[in-house]
Amino acid sequence: MTTRVHDFNISVAEILGQPGHHRDLHLEAPLNGVGTTLAHLEEKPLRADLRAESVVEGILITGNLEGSTILECARCLKEFRASVDLDVCELFLAPGAEPEDQEAYRISGTDIDLEPMLRDAVTLSLPLNPLCEEDCKGMCARCGRDLNLGACDCTEDTTDPRWAELDALRDRLSG
Ligand SMILES: [Zn+2]
Ligand SMILES: [Zn+2]
Figure: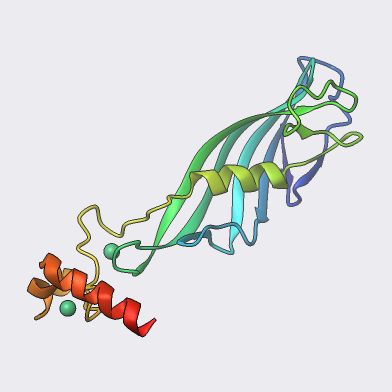
């Protein structure tokens, strides 16, 4: 049986301390404010199918997350959407369990707050350099034209290293 939940705080009272027992959860809740400079999760509910499994050390959470992200192309700055689909497998230590790892997720009483773990998992999955297309040509550094739409008149200038040197000099003088 799968329990539908709309809250990141789940109770594991029924299975805690009973290794071998599990609970299946279908979670749908918005996870706001997750993102990096060029990528963030859309403000729509994140969907997760998770199994909470009682093990000797605590509760093991495994399953799959689905959501959608808004990305900004690192080359041309165009916005585009992409889906997130990732698997998680994280142990939540029972209260009183030896803190082998200070960073470990923990069960508080008989409750698990899934939000920090989901936040970490999504953040780590976001691309550092999103590209709208593998071969996105980017923007002209001089005139700002989207080079995917065709070359601009100053393209040759920017590829000449002597101009780059002059630009750097001018930046230093004006800065
Ligand atoms: Zn692009
Ligand atoms: Zn240009």
